Length: 120
Image 1 (cartoon, rainbow, N blue to C red):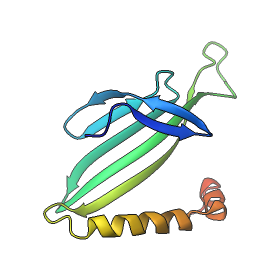
Image 2: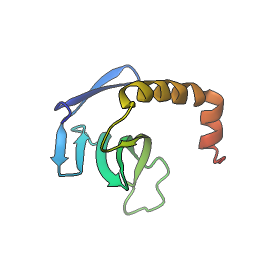
Image 3: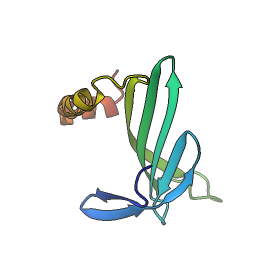
Image 4: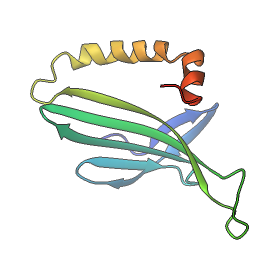
């Protein structure tokens, strides 16, 4: 199980995310002001284990359309999925750091902008 609380740095500011809930297949962490949330979930597909992590920032809607309820939560998030053979976990410790480095290099500012713009 991950540490409790988790600590993240967002735009130069440290944030504490205590564990809010835990079940067999997931853990949920969140900041006291509900601005940040982090979820880790794990499940099995065929012979693989899939672990998904997502960090989300929530903010009030800057353009409310309902005069009676100006608050609509807007979520922006980044996720990461790990997939590995459940029985052997073969080469995970070696390959995952290489894949992480490759993914960070791939998602440079140009590709990031194109993805945000909706390209597939």
